[in-house]
Image (spheres, rainbow, N blue to C red):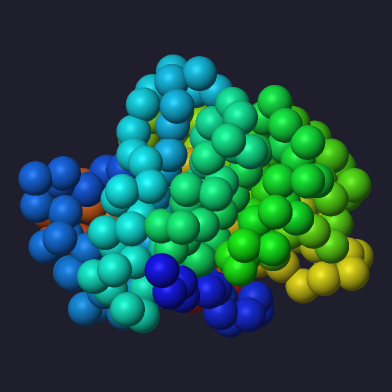
Length: 234
């Protein structure tokens, strides 16, 4: 399965629509709408009912998206207890980015290396209660650092107060690392919070309900991207 990799970091800000909040009975039309508006990066939230209480998507959806949309980077965010058991399936499905959590029951270093060996970009995610400094020992092994601004497991949550400081800390960590990386923020991103995250240093913002919850995903995507770009210049 051919995969589309992420563009080099530094081309942000980028809005990454999360299909967790899309209409599951009309997902193709929803994705078509945001791609028409300019999106080239989609996130699939993968939940196993153990690492988080919810259960969501698997490799089949990643494969469907990667097969249908030839210029789309499909981002698999693995909110799973044992990512080492399922990374091969998501590589085979065509994921361009696979993100795993620092809190998973895994040799995270080995998992990040396996993602890269499989031909995809590797992401490292940090839950709100995990110090940003924990990512330092994995510097050079990830292409994207994801700072969660909600406790993972469900869409539609509110951006946690004080998250800007953690985003800023992550930006400083990336600046001092050996390898350029995207800084992604996920959780409660909308018209009011996206500018806060962007000003704090995020260059990739995951948005679910803010894009897919308003009925016109393409228009919502465009408005959110405009708000973020304006914020970066303030």
